[in-house]
Amino acid sequence: MLTRAVARAGSLLLRLAALWHDVGKPFAPGPVSHAEEGARIADAALRRLAYDNDTRAAVVLRVREHPYDEDREPAELSARRFLARVGGDAALDLLALRRCD
Image (cartoon, rainbow, N blue to C red):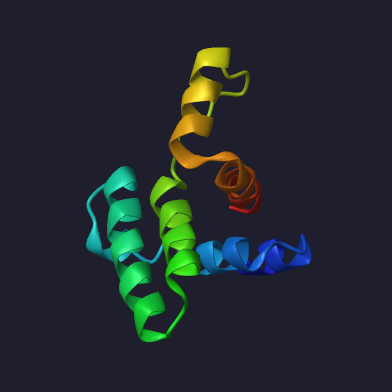
């Protein structure tokens, strides 16, 4: 996963999200809850590693949102909701994260 993100010349945020995106799996019972747990773990780790608040928040968002529902042909309304929830920059990273995963 991380190798693919690096090979795609992903941003630092994408590479950090790729590194941390599934860290919560051993501690959570389901697919959505693993993302929440992973976001919590990534937040604590990035804080200890002294990443700035903006970087930390952006990575945590990507880790938390990575198991989004995927429609092959998304409806316009669901695409708008997705973009409103995560923002344009995060949306592109989440799509790349999904392709790498």
